[in-house]
Amino acid sequence: MTTRTAHRTRRTLRVAGAGAAALLALSACSSPDDSSSGTSDRSASASSQEKLSGTVTVFAAASLKEGFEILGKNFEKEHPGTKVTFSFGGSDSLAASITGGAPADVFASASPKTMKIVTDAGDASGTPATFVRNELEIATLPGNPDKIDSLKDLTNPDLKVVLCDKEVPCGAAAQKALDAAGLKLTPVSYEQDVKGALTKVELKEADAAVVYKTDVHAAGDKVEGVRFPESADAINDYPIVRLEDAKNAEAAEAFIALVRSAEGRQVLTGAGFLEP
Image 1: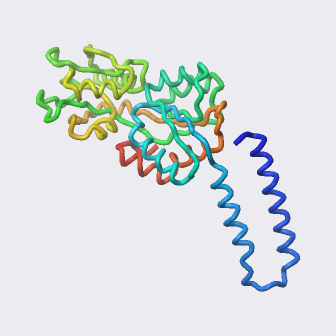
Image 2: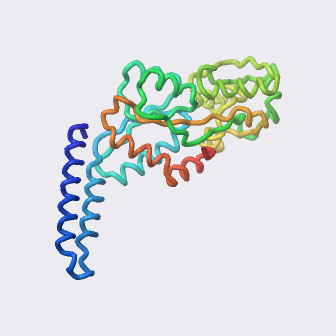
Image 3: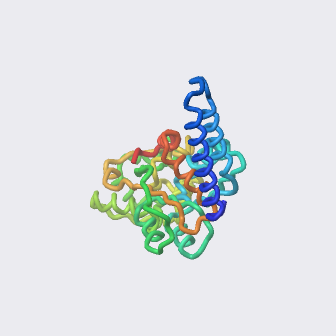
């Protein structure tokens, strides 16, 4: 819906509300069982639901894929006539696409740093809100055949270890954890997003990768997760915001509301995310 149409709709609702108030005043002596007000409220609610339509384009960190796809389907069911499309990837690449003019309605980033790229460019509408947090785990081959038990074990030169690129939030977090442990690690490759790093282990092209707990959770029995205490020093906040040039602003706000609702928190914590 366009801004002009939205203003016109709100004006119509205000006029309708004023008319309803006048009718109530004139019928003050009518039966207390009169339910016209309740009917009016229900009609207004139905009208509010009906006005959401069209496509909502969401740019989101790769680690949000499983949870957001569930929420996208739920949103479409709750708002018939809408469609949620996603572009998942490294938060830094998504931020660069947004500032470069790529059309999107919502941006959900895996770190405040990458969100700041968008806000500093003036491409965000309002203040981003943190909706979940995420921590790191080591993903190993099923059964953990190399007996990896700590972050220090990854420095074994006989192991093929993969990290996310340092510009990507999962890579920056991994480096922060390594620094906290006083360790240096040279991976066999740096991947552009967390899913790329995890895939290397799933395909047995690497022995281990430092990824998010949520990605280990989503991979099921394809990998095994190993927790390590230094992850507590590298927990990432995930902010979300409507974009300034959103073509479907009202539906974008409604999707963000769903993500931040009790329903959204239940889906995302079920996927392994932490409460904000």
